[in-house]
Length: 364
Image 1 (tube, rainbow, N blue to C red):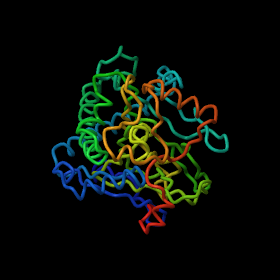
Image 2: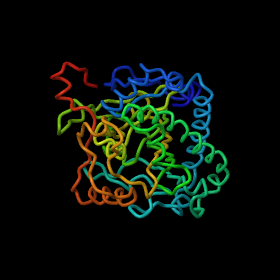
Image 3: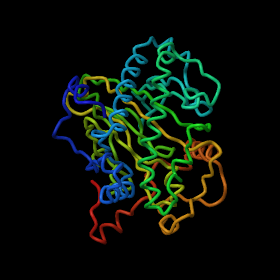
């Protein structure tokens, strides 16, 4: 998440709400090849698929935080624009997921409108892999900064995924090579705003529970509201089973998506998460977030990777056999969700029941 100065602008995260216990990994140690830190990363990828990444202490990490700060400023500027202006650039799912999504375009559990707006920027557009898209003037002004963010964020992802390569028995650079910058993909930078709630009685789901479809996501936010469904939760969870993620200054929140489960044959986890009304006094302020969602190149194969014993040895969801490229796989998955054939649920990773039987700790 951004710096301490940015956090100081908002009410503090309360101490009396249920919080998920996530690993907070040191980017400094990962860059140095620290074996213990690498093991912690792999365990986090198997247990919840989520971890905090402390970006302080290295030039690469500090640069990423500066890019995040600039992206927060752009998020503020985007969402200050008039709705009539923003709707000129409306996204049109499922054919086109880039552009502006207004509050209420989606529904929550009871059919009520959602309370989240976002503007999705296409990596292909910003980097020139595709024809330039129409966008508000403020986006055009920030194009150089956005290009730098995509390039630097990709480097950070490559550092993380190099450790997963090793643990999965893959040649170094395998996983990041499936999402190259220069090839067309669904990769995006999403600038999000969730509406404030003036009263405690207004507390509700702002964005339905889901997993991320892509490879890996890097999220920056200051105000709470994001919740994770722990692996130990029952198959039909109650609201009380969900756990808040506490934003931490100087950290990014990293999570794996469905594509990574597919490639690993279910070794790693893509976990359910949702957005609800922010806890405590934070509910009264807008919740701004910046998410870099890395997806495979359109023509990348979604077959399970077979270059290592770790990949071949386990499957708890994911790893469908037979060639299909990422573009068709993403369309297939989206169609399944629309038809109700594939309900949103966590997939892959360690089975909590087996972990308990072995005396291993399960994330709560």
